[in-house]
Image (cartoon, helix red, strand yellow):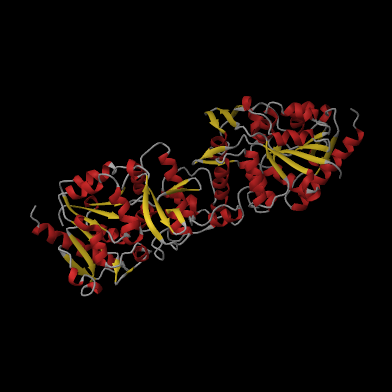
Length: 320
Length: 320
């Protein structure tokens, strides 16, 4: 395909589609703009879970069992932490830890998170451009029945069990899209934007909430399509469906399409939802149904190819 | 034995004697005042090599092959660091790393190095008191034929190969003995002070150079004895003999005794040096000859017992 693609993505689920895209597109054609609302400082180390998952996935070193962390990982640091009675609810493998320590070093030079991520990617021989949504810290806060929780406390420590009432993105008012992210969206060779099948509330909304991001997406000279993370009324991974229910939204691909609303120029739902989900309320936008479950690399490439074909078909028919 | 013992010590060699002492004395009888001139910040983490060696040795988790670091250690963090092209000349094992990360956390609370060390010792179930010589950072600098080097650059990165011309202890002017160290030396129940068989120049001199330390040692109501780290004209471990030669001092137990000079109330040299080293220049102070080589735990306990007996004999004969 001609032209460049930007993907907006969170961690595990989104990274699968980005990996698929990276197998079809040339490296210089693909840019991932990644959620940093999950970032936090833990044991003095700056952790960027979604950036890390993207990097490990594209570097081919991700743990295939979990979709995050490193393969062939060991946990002796965590074991020793436990003996020292430090916090152990957030798992950092011995290999993974090097990323956080080096990130801390690089940030302290000082450097922006964009620059640091680029350096890490170079060392991991990743040629796809991985960009944080912003160089300004944004921290997702989850207002729950157990009170206000930092994202990782909600997600990892409390295993996403508290009932979500509202989501807030601390620091968002002062945040701006990273210069590189803006530049990717303003690229005249942009052929399409993909919202990856990540959690709409936890992973994509923080990106969309960065002041200036929506405007840049809407101004982009290319169609925007989303791939539904909800299949058959449930999330393939993570608490997306649970959160939607808690927020009073029936979990469905249709609800995801409604959530992204006017940003969308097209929507890809799973073929399992072809007949049922949209029903009579079929949205007034191009729809594509596909087997969106991505277990193998072939699955990921297949979904990526469908997404790119869909974008091309929309781009060709578009009248601006 | 009645009364309390303070040991001044560096890392590996000194820790062996302290371990021996800890098997004879009750926990509350023994205090180790430890060199922190080797401390440095590496990859953003505060490393205290001699404190760590003391802790790991007394906790029974030290690597028996090296005398430093942890047993059953793994090195995946270092491997990942290497891939990220970070500095890898200083080895930090996956288990060992937890100590540095937790130390950084505790220091940032804030807390003094003395308090932090106490907390770490509690978590490692160490009952012997391990004290940094000072809560103020002191950094040993080695002036060499290759220029001025930070201690760890000289010692680890350059493997102690540069020729030493002079040693300096940056920050020493502003340093004071830690309150706990002073209090241990002023203890009316103090029965003796031991200078462990550590490197006199690299490990013991920084302790002695802390303003107020010499005065406190000389004012202490107990004899001070040193155990020679030089046996048969060479150091059992490390560059002590090499450094002495480079500084124009013939490496011998006698030279070590002269180096400590008027601080000493007694000196223990190896029995291999009984006839040769002191020659006609036998110092005017109580001497004890003993097999000071400490391979096994029994060796360490044996040398510790000899040291304590020697202290008792001196203390009994002392007229002040």
